[in-house]
Image (cartoon, rainbow, N blue to C red; front, side, top):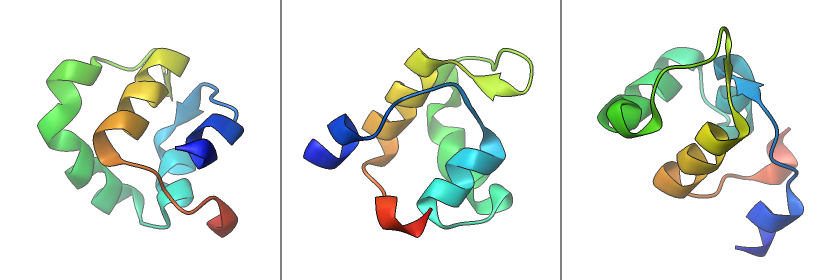
Length: 67
């Protein structure tokens, strides 16, 4: 939990989020599919900060050292 709090949540695109989890965009999109109705549509190419927070809550923390 402290790792997520130390990480500054900002608007991110799919590539940035996938890199944070250490997976390809295709795998990340597969992980995201069950939650897409809850998260909602992106604003242009980016997920909003609220959407990024929801994604972190749904998928769990990731390895921050992998960036």
